[in-house]
Length: 282
Image (cartoon, rainbow, N blue to C red):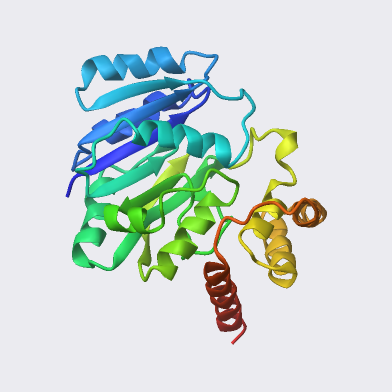
């Protein structure tokens, strides 16, 4: 199977070489890697160009956006710029972050999941962060969720979900819509990826209400939003975030922010969420 990788990068001079070194050393190499240099003001472009000159399957796209590190729209707009430079002959499309070190068999094992089950639409490993000189699971989500840092899509699934939404919550919406279209989400606990920069460490303060806005635009409704807000805040060990999430939700509701999913998709999403919560209570 042919794998294409797109890596949005904004001021990643400390990490991008480590990410690319781990990818060019894979037991199964990708066909193409596109790094989207998104308005970096450091040496990201220079470092990537060194790889471009050394590997004929790596290319760079330079794009300009806000210098703020905002979750959601910025990274997906950059990702889409990279996708637009690719042809359509791939089998697997990956959106990887620029601050990861992949185990050398990552692409080989990821590809095997797609080959072994034709109904698998998405595959991913798990992010580990360094704490007290040990690599530990970055425990921000359930084990059945693929982190936004390391998404991989079967082409048919990517097409069915109409690509990625340029909004906060894109990395939840993609999985919900994949399941709506009868695709399976496959996670692999043996694929342990080193995440060199813990999630959210450099997010702009303006982003603090974005999560609540995302819950609204995904048509969660208030009760599921409240439960999801409490759960996420506790996982992040910051209970005060519940207030920010709820403010964001009601802000989006008051402004009548456009929904990212249809009414039918919203009904499916709420039903799926309730069923998962019930299973965990039983």
